[in-house]
Length: 556
Image (cartoon, rainbow, N blue to C red):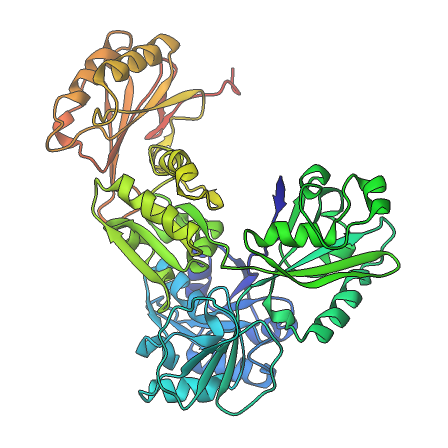
């Protein structure tokens, strides 16, 4: 079974007009332009998803005001003062993502985010920015009443959980995947409950499936806003008729589709592609257990479509690596996974590390250190029940972290889809601060014998010395584990000279960061703690202009 998901990272442009502003944009991971701010914004307004304007708020307002059209299509606009003290969400707060962008920029610069959107300030769930939902209708009226202490009445045409309880009205929120007439004080909140199955011939035009689908959805009284996924046979996953529908694509082999019972099988299709159904089978399979076929196969000249409704939300678990600490080392994929989550679970310190990404509708579950099994079990249970869960950890989840435990436990928890989102691991962050000590073959070894017998750790250290590898030592020392680093040092000294370069990095990329260059002979274990990484060079490692370098051989 295969799956491909298409997503687009927001295109953000950082624009400066002063030298101070230029220095600020250089610290941001966006395309930077220096010069005529007004001309740049006018020229690029329809091309990008967001602007970070390094200028006074008044200047930014005057520049963008003539360009504003509709909040559903306008880009996000954030302004930053030349001192980098305040990051202001100017417009496009929810729909454009300016509130998120302001918090992201503030994290990168260490500035104060200024967000004035009323729902964000009051902690009221933003209906037009709830992860996983599309809201249409009188959003402003419902939000005003809610802010005045009158939560909306929640009504449903399908049983789908929402992250708020609602109230007595008089405004209403209707949770539905059906088309509804607009009315004052009514918001239709549509979850991704519908899955579209598509079959297409190789010569199908890009709009072949879309035309069929629009007509079928109209006859069934269903809303296109509730389409969450498109499903098809694997050989058609990249066809224009499938991708033109603009939703993530799930693709299945013919033999998997052939096992799905459908109301309208075709012997002709079976002879051609190896399954008696593509559209209906793919829709039902992707919609999961208990799915209902709400639009039977609709056949056109070169395409077929069918629509299935999920019986429950499709939950998932993303094991997210936040990187070593500073937001500038957090990947775009990690940011997206956390923002899209219904539930964020993690050790207190790691939840705090991504606090700028948490929305008012996000359920946050904090757990103490040492509760790793419970943490993973809860993440998997919530994912199996239909929540989109982000289980956060420091560094990379696959390096001495949570990914292995989640993968081991997943089969016993209904096996929700699991994604591992990589991050910058501590060894990489430490190596970058030291120079290039891990530029050649190297090893990562944890000195914690909490889960691994010391005998096994010692064998690995001796293998490292025999192979002459540079090594990064994780979990080198704690208040209760005081002898392991000294023992590791002695083992390494058996095969390496006392002059071997060593780097100690503590709190890499975080407040309190410390970097110490020493040698294996002079290494003082008492200066090392649990938040340190110790990097020990190989026989070829040297110090060049204050940087530890393990050569790759380019200059020899």
